[in-house]
Image 1 (cartoon, rainbow, N blue to C red):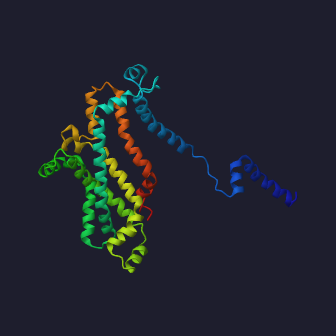
Image 2 (cartoon, one colour):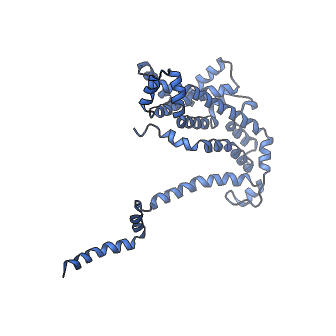
Image 3 (tube, rainbow, N blue to C red):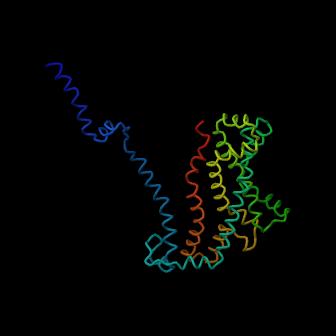
Amino acid sequence: MSTTDTLTRERRPHRTAAARSPRRARARRTGRPYRRADWAGGAAAAVWLVIVAVPLYYVVASSLRDRSDYLDAGPLSLPHHLVFSNYRTVLDSGFPTYLWNSIVVSAATVALVLLLALPAAYAVVRSRSRFVSAGFSVMLMGLAIPAQATIVPVYLIITRLHVYDTLLAVILPTAAFSLPMAILVLTSTMRDIPGELYEAMTMDGAAALQTLRSLVLPLSRPGLVTIGIYTALGAWNGFIFPLVLTQSDARRTVTLGLWNYQGQQGGVNVPATMAAVLLSLLPLLVAYLFGRRQLLSGLTAGFGK
Protein backbone atom coordinates (compact mmCIF):
# COMPACT_ATOMS: atom_id res chain seq x y z
CA MET A 1 0.00 0.00 0.00
CA SER A 2 1.38 3.39 -0.93
CA THR A 3 1.81 6.36 1.32
CA THR A 4 -0.82 8.29 -0.66
CA ASP A 5 -3.53 5.65 0.02
CA THR A 6 -2.70 5.65 3.73
CA LEU A 7 -3.07 9.44 3.98
CA THR A 8 -6.33 9.28 2.03
CA ARG A 9 -7.83 6.74 4.45
CA GLU A 10 -6.71 8.77 7.46
CA ARG A 11 -8.43 11.87 6.12
CA ARG A 12 -11.78 10.16 5.38
CA PRO A 13 -13.10 10.23 8.97
CA HIS A 14 -12.47 13.98 9.12
CA ARG A 15 -14.45 14.52 5.93
CA THR A 16 -17.27 12.33 7.22
CA ALA A 17 -17.48 14.27 10.52
CA ALA A 18 -17.59 17.55 8.63
CA ALA A 19 -20.31 16.19 6.35
CA ARG A 20 -22.35 15.09 9.37
CA SER A 21 -22.07 18.56 10.95
CA PRO A 22 -23.12 21.15 8.36
CA ARG A 23 -23.19 23.93 10.98
CA ARG A 24 -19.57 23.26 11.88
CA ALA A 25 -18.57 23.23 8.21
CA ARG A 26 -20.42 26.48 7.60
CA ALA A 27 -18.66 28.02 10.61
CA ARG A 28 -15.30 27.01 9.17
CA ARG A 29 -16.09 28.55 5.80
CA THR A 30 -17.37 31.84 7.26
CA GLY A 31 -14.72 32.07 9.96
CA ARG A 32 -17.28 32.43 12.76
CA PRO A 33 -16.92 30.46 16.02
CA TYR A 34 -18.99 27.30 16.28
CA ARG A 35 -21.41 27.23 19.19
CA ARG A 36 -23.50 24.31 20.30
CA ALA A 37 -27.12 24.78 21.21
CA ASP A 38 -27.62 25.29 24.95
CA TRP A 39 -30.75 23.21 25.48
CA ALA A 40 -30.55 23.43 29.28
CA GLY A 41 -30.36 27.21 29.19
CA GLY A 42 -33.23 27.39 26.72
CA ALA A 43 -35.38 25.15 28.92
CA ALA A 44 -34.60 27.26 32.00
CA ALA A 45 -35.46 30.45 30.08
CA ALA A 46 -38.76 28.91 28.93
CA VAL A 47 -39.66 27.96 32.50
CA TRP A 48 -38.83 31.46 33.71
CA LEU A 49 -40.93 32.95 30.89
CA VAL A 50 -43.91 30.91 32.03
CA ILE A 51 -43.40 31.97 35.65
CA VAL A 52 -43.39 35.64 34.64
CA ALA A 53 -46.03 35.53 31.90
CA VAL A 54 -48.76 33.63 33.76
CA PRO A 55 -49.24 36.25 36.54
CA LEU A 56 -49.21 39.07 33.98
CA TYR A 57 -51.79 37.23 31.88
CA TYR A 58 -53.90 36.67 34.99
CA VAL A 59 -53.88 40.38 35.89
CA VAL A 60 -54.69 41.60 32.37
CA ALA A 61 -57.30 38.95 31.57
CA SER A 62 -59.05 39.29 34.93
CA SER A 63 -59.29 43.08 34.61
CA LEU A 64 -61.12 42.75 31.25
CA ARG A 65 -63.98 40.52 32.45
CA ASP A 66 -66.94 40.99 34.73
CA ARG A 67 -67.40 39.32 38.09
CA SER A 68 -69.81 36.63 36.91
CA ASP A 69 -67.54 35.58 34.02
CA TYR A 70 -64.58 35.37 36.41
CA LEU A 71 -66.46 33.14 38.85
CA ASP A 72 -68.01 30.87 36.22
CA ALA A 73 -65.17 30.32 33.73
CA GLY A 74 -62.20 30.35 36.13
CA PRO A 75 -59.30 32.75 36.64
CA LEU A 76 -57.04 31.57 33.77
CA SER A 77 -59.67 31.23 31.03
CA LEU A 78 -59.97 33.73 28.20
CA PRO A 79 -62.62 36.43 28.73
CA HIS A 80 -65.73 35.87 26.64
CA HIS A 81 -66.42 39.60 26.32
CA LEU A 82 -64.00 42.45 26.94
CA VAL A 83 -65.33 44.63 29.76
CA PHE A 84 -63.82 48.02 30.62
CA SER A 85 -66.24 48.91 33.38
CA ASN A 86 -63.76 47.70 36.00
CA TYR A 87 -61.42 50.56 35.15
CA ARG A 88 -64.30 53.03 35.36
CA THR A 89 -65.16 51.66 38.80
CA VAL A 90 -61.58 52.07 39.97
CA LEU A 91 -61.23 55.60 38.60
CA ASP A 92 -64.52 56.68 40.22
CA SER A 93 -63.46 55.37 43.64
CA GLY A 94 -60.70 57.92 44.27
CA PHE A 95 -57.87 55.83 42.87
CA PRO A 96 -56.45 58.72 40.74
CA THR A 97 -55.65 60.54 43.99
CA TYR A 98 -53.60 57.56 45.15
CA LEU A 99 -51.78 57.48 41.83
CA TRP A 100 -50.98 61.18 42.01
CA ASN A 101 -49.70 60.89 45.59
CA SER A 102 -47.41 58.01 44.59
CA ILE A 103 -46.10 59.99 41.61
CA VAL A 104 -45.31 62.98 43.85
CA VAL A 105 -43.64 60.80 46.50
CA SER A 106 -41.58 58.88 43.93
CA ALA A 107 -40.48 61.95 41.97
CA ALA A 108 -39.56 63.94 45.09
CA THR A 109 -37.69 60.97 46.59
CA VAL A 110 -35.70 60.41 43.39
CA ALA A 111 -34.81 64.11 43.14
CA LEU A 112 -33.71 64.25 46.78
CA VAL A 113 -31.63 61.06 46.53
CA LEU A 114 -29.89 62.19 43.33
CA LEU A 115 -29.18 65.61 44.81
CA LEU A 116 -27.52 64.11 47.90
CA ALA A 117 -25.94 60.93 46.50
CA LEU A 118 -24.04 62.56 43.62
CA PRO A 119 -21.78 64.88 45.66
CA ALA A 120 -21.44 62.24 48.41
CA ALA A 121 -20.20 59.60 45.95
CA TYR A 122 -17.86 62.15 44.33
CA ALA A 123 -16.36 62.93 47.74
CA VAL A 124 -15.87 59.23 48.49
CA VAL A 125 -14.07 58.63 45.18
CA ARG A 126 -11.86 61.73 45.10
CA SER A 127 -11.19 62.43 48.77
CA ARG A 128 -8.33 60.81 50.67
CA SER A 129 -9.64 61.82 54.07
CA ARG A 130 -10.14 59.14 56.71
CA PHE A 131 -13.22 60.97 57.90
CA VAL A 132 -14.87 60.56 54.49
CA SER A 133 -13.90 56.89 54.34
CA ALA A 134 -15.30 56.27 57.82
CA GLY A 135 -18.50 58.10 56.93
CA PHE A 136 -18.88 55.95 53.83
CA SER A 137 -18.52 52.80 55.93
CA VAL A 138 -21.12 54.04 58.39
CA MET A 139 -23.43 54.91 55.51
CA LEU A 140 -23.15 51.39 54.11
CA MET A 141 -24.33 50.02 57.45
CA GLY A 142 -27.74 51.37 56.49
CA LEU A 143 -28.05 48.52 53.99
CA ALA A 144 -28.28 46.05 56.89
CA ILE A 145 -30.97 47.96 58.81
CA PRO A 146 -34.57 47.26 57.71
CA ALA A 147 -37.10 50.06 57.77
CA GLN A 148 -39.43 48.07 60.01
CA ALA A 149 -36.83 48.08 62.79
CA THR A 150 -36.75 51.90 62.93
CA ILE A 151 -40.42 52.72 62.49
CA VAL A 152 -40.89 53.87 66.12
CA PRO A 153 -38.03 56.44 66.15
CA VAL A 154 -38.99 57.55 62.64
CA TYR A 155 -42.57 58.12 63.84
CA LEU A 156 -41.31 60.19 66.80
CA ILE A 157 -39.08 62.30 64.55
CA ILE A 158 -41.88 62.93 62.05
CA THR A 159 -44.30 64.00 64.80
CA ARG A 160 -41.67 66.30 66.36
CA LEU A 161 -41.15 67.93 62.95
CA HIS A 162 -44.94 68.48 62.69
CA VAL A 163 -45.17 66.89 59.25
CA TYR A 164 -47.32 63.90 60.22
CA ASP A 165 -50.06 63.00 57.70
CA THR A 166 -48.30 64.77 54.85
CA LEU A 167 -46.51 63.48 51.78
CA LEU A 168 -43.29 64.94 53.16
CA ALA A 169 -43.54 62.47 56.05
CA VAL A 170 -43.29 59.64 53.50
CA ILE A 171 -40.66 61.28 51.30
CA LEU A 172 -38.02 61.96 53.96
CA PRO A 173 -37.60 58.44 55.45
CA THR A 174 -37.94 56.79 52.04
CA ALA A 175 -35.10 58.93 50.69
CA ALA A 176 -33.00 58.26 53.79
CA PHE A 177 -33.25 54.49 53.38
CA SER A 178 -32.51 54.73 49.64
CA LEU A 179 -29.30 56.75 50.05
CA PRO A 180 -26.88 53.91 51.00
CA MET A 181 -27.58 51.88 47.87
CA ALA A 182 -27.55 55.01 45.71
CA ILE A 183 -24.13 56.09 47.02
CA LEU A 184 -22.75 52.56 46.57
CA VAL A 185 -23.86 52.35 42.92
CA LEU A 186 -22.65 55.86 42.09
CA THR A 187 -19.30 55.22 43.76
CA SER A 188 -18.76 52.14 41.60
CA THR A 189 -19.74 54.14 38.50
CA MET A 190 -17.37 57.03 39.26
CA ARG A 191 -14.46 54.68 39.87
CA ASP A 192 -14.74 53.60 36.24
CA ILE A 193 -13.83 57.14 35.14
CA PRO A 194 -10.09 57.20 34.24
CA GLY A 195 -7.88 59.21 36.58
CA GLU A 196 -6.26 60.92 33.62
CA LEU A 197 -9.49 62.80 32.95
CA TYR A 198 -9.54 64.17 36.48
CA GLU A 199 -5.90 65.23 36.14
CA ALA A 200 -6.64 66.92 32.81
CA MET A 201 -9.48 68.90 34.36
CA THR A 202 -7.22 69.91 37.26
CA MET A 203 -4.43 71.04 34.91
CA ASP A 204 -6.94 73.15 33.00
CA GLY A 205 -7.75 74.98 36.21
CA ALA A 206 -11.20 73.48 36.79
CA ALA A 207 -12.55 73.60 40.34
CA ALA A 208 -14.16 70.65 42.06
CA LEU A 209 -17.68 71.87 41.29
CA GLN A 210 -16.84 72.42 37.61
CA THR A 211 -15.27 68.93 37.39
CA LEU A 212 -18.39 67.46 38.94
CA ARG A 213 -20.65 69.27 36.48
CA SER A 214 -18.60 68.93 33.29
CA LEU A 215 -16.94 65.52 33.70
CA VAL A 216 -18.54 63.37 36.38
CA LEU A 217 -22.17 64.15 35.70
CA PRO A 218 -22.18 63.18 31.97
CA LEU A 219 -20.09 60.03 32.49
CA SER A 220 -22.19 58.90 35.47
CA ARG A 221 -25.47 58.90 33.56
CA PRO A 222 -25.92 55.08 33.64
CA GLY A 223 -25.48 55.05 37.40
CA LEU A 224 -27.86 57.98 37.84
CA VAL A 225 -30.52 56.26 35.77
CA THR A 226 -30.01 53.05 37.73
CA ILE A 227 -30.45 54.60 41.14
CA GLY A 228 -33.32 56.70 39.82
CA ILE A 229 -35.24 53.60 38.76
CA TYR A 230 -34.26 51.70 41.91
CA THR A 231 -35.35 54.57 44.17
CA ALA A 232 -38.58 55.08 42.25
CA LEU A 233 -39.43 51.39 42.62
CA GLY A 234 -38.80 51.51 46.35
CA ALA A 235 -40.84 54.67 46.83
CA TRP A 236 -43.67 53.42 44.62
CA ASN A 237 -43.92 50.04 46.37
CA GLY A 238 -43.42 51.41 49.88
CA PHE A 239 -46.08 50.36 52.35
CA ILE A 240 -44.85 50.71 55.94
CA PHE A 241 -44.18 54.47 55.87
CA PRO A 242 -47.53 55.47 54.26
CA LEU A 243 -49.33 53.14 56.66
CA VAL A 244 -47.77 54.55 59.83
CA LEU A 245 -47.02 58.17 58.88
CA THR A 246 -50.28 59.10 57.12
CA GLN A 247 -53.89 58.91 58.21
CA SER A 248 -56.27 60.74 55.87
CA ASP A 249 -57.60 59.40 52.58
CA ALA A 250 -56.15 62.38 50.68
CA ARG A 251 -52.59 61.29 51.62
CA ARG A 252 -52.83 57.62 50.68
CA THR A 253 -50.45 56.17 48.13
CA VAL A 254 -51.09 53.37 45.63
CA THR A 255 -50.00 50.51 47.87
CA LEU A 256 -52.13 51.66 50.77
CA GLY A 257 -54.98 52.44 48.39
CA LEU A 258 -54.87 48.93 46.93
CA TRP A 259 -54.98 47.46 50.41
CA ASN A 260 -57.94 49.58 51.43
CA TYR A 261 -59.62 49.10 48.05
CA GLN A 262 -59.52 45.34 48.46
CA GLY A 263 -61.12 45.69 51.87
CA GLN A 264 -63.85 47.95 50.50
CA GLN A 265 -64.68 45.41 47.79
CA GLY A 266 -65.03 42.66 50.39
CA GLY A 267 -62.51 40.44 48.62
CA VAL A 268 -65.16 39.49 46.01
CA ASN A 269 -64.71 41.88 43.09
CA VAL A 270 -61.40 40.42 41.89
CA PRO A 271 -61.61 41.89 38.34
CA ALA A 272 -61.88 45.44 39.70
CA THR A 273 -58.97 44.81 42.04
CA MET A 274 -56.86 43.51 39.13
CA ALA A 275 -57.75 46.63 37.15
CA ALA A 276 -56.43 48.75 40.02
CA VAL A 277 -53.24 46.65 40.13
CA LEU A 278 -52.72 47.09 36.38
CA LEU A 279 -53.18 50.86 36.63
CA SER A 280 -50.59 50.97 39.41
CA LEU A 281 -48.09 49.07 37.22
CA LEU A 282 -48.23 51.41 34.22
CA PRO A 283 -45.94 54.18 35.59
CA LEU A 284 -43.30 51.59 36.54
CA LEU A 285 -43.38 50.09 33.06
CA VAL A 286 -42.95 53.54 31.49
CA ALA A 287 -39.97 54.29 33.75
CA TYR A 288 -38.36 50.96 32.86
CA LEU A 289 -38.86 51.44 29.10
CA PHE A 290 -37.08 54.79 29.23
CA GLY A 291 -34.18 53.60 31.37
CA ARG A 292 -33.65 49.96 30.43
CA ARG A 293 -30.51 50.67 28.37
CA GLN A 294 -28.60 52.34 31.21
CA LEU A 295 -29.97 50.05 33.93
CA LEU A 296 -27.70 47.05 33.30
CA SER A 297 -24.57 49.11 32.68
CA GLY A 298 -25.16 51.07 35.85
CA LEU A 299 -25.67 47.96 37.99
CA THR A 300 -22.49 46.30 36.67
CA ALA A 301 -20.31 49.40 36.87
CA GLY A 302 -17.08 48.86 38.78
CA PHE A 303 -17.38 45.07 39.02
CA GLY A 304 -14.99 44.40 36.12
CA LYS A 305 -11.98 45.76 37.98
